Length: 215
Image 1 (tube, helix red, strand yellow):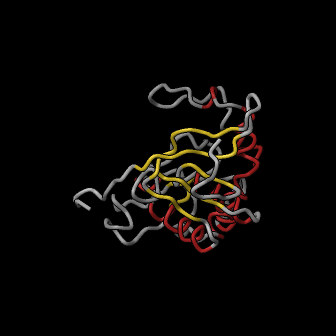
Image 2: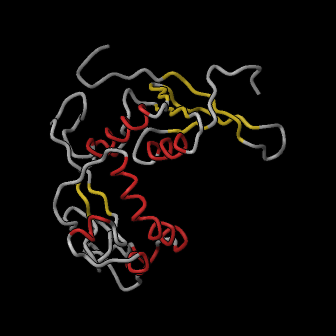
């Protein structure tokens, strides 16, 4: 255990992508101080390169707005259905962990509202299954994030994934989340007991630059 820490926070989140950003926001909303550690030169992870399609159903406000009937039990049934096989032969649904899918189904609507509350804008169209993969067959559940600034500093690909992660980043920063970019987690620091409670992390400086620039 180090004699002192370079930085301290109640919660340290590793990775500033589609999982890390909401985790950081939920932690700071609960009153914790939060540091997000990210190895890249910017936030976003794989999500910022995505098309920003977010499959959330179960009766979201968007589904209700457009008269789409859905429920958590239906989401769960779809995502654990042994009879569904993808066109390429992948039997995705039958291998899903039932406990994970139950939690996902039960929290779909809350997750949708969380995203909207934290600034994510979705296209003003009815949820559909366009661009979807493994989202279920019983109800349209795909929501499409909005990104209108094209390719540039805000989005390396110009895709709508930036419309998902940039608002979450802005919300996290406004709420006091601190970001440590260019640093990769290298190990967990634990107490002496076995297996030992995690009390911190070590990181390594990983300087990276935007493609096409030298600084």
